[in-house]
Length: 353
Image (cartoon, rainbow, N blue to C red):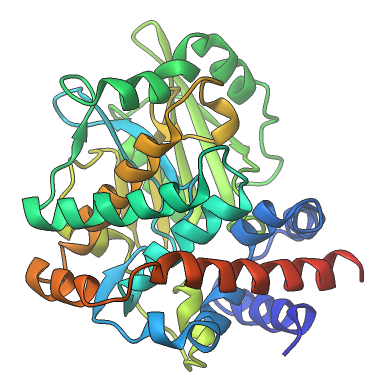
């Protein structure tokens, strides 16, 4: 099946589960034609459809409740209930049971497609190194207030001018039509106190989720702004790729609850809406927001460790460790190259049509 047909069929399936915002979907299609890395981010459904066929040896692995749509820009920071700055995986929209190797492979392939400046072989090797070290340690969250100075420097560089973040949110136009009642209720439940007056805007963000309803509510509270976002969720694209019929559970809350993780107390799945706090220090980190002088090797190793933090919530470390250490040297780089080639072929096909 060609990428255009796969995209059409997936979007038809998605429309059975949620309301599509056509303008945002058209923008997504435009972004898919700009560069292979945005294309990868926007097309997890295609990855879920083909990766087992492209890399059957990699796919023959124990299953975990996995992130699914993992890539080098699916990491960010938030505040835990103690107010500490935490770094980790940001988005679990596509969480599903699948071979643990999916997340490692997609992370590695994304590093190739994002054209990170570090040595490719070393970068992919340290993803595995971090993953194995986390398995052996039983996992540990990344609390930046006390540890991980290099990672803290990279993660906080974007926080020097928080005014720009709030100016961007305040500049969003208020919605003309009343948002769905479920979204409004979900937002109200996550505000710092009841009875606040807030205005709601439509927000365009991300790539994979473009086309879904996404609302941000902004209120003034104790001398400054607070914001909450509600995003419509559907079952994982893995359900579509496996040709599942009917509906299926959304695994977002399950995966963040069971992971080795310092959770954000303001992230909660409420029916089919995922609600989160938005703030300069509670957001996804794009590579372009990192300092120009950065330790990408250390960053990729941390990403590998954090991937294991999530997998340890649903699988025994021994099972994953035994499988991983039996794999041939260089397997991840080899598989990542195959997926890179497949993604580039799809990108070329889609961008020239």
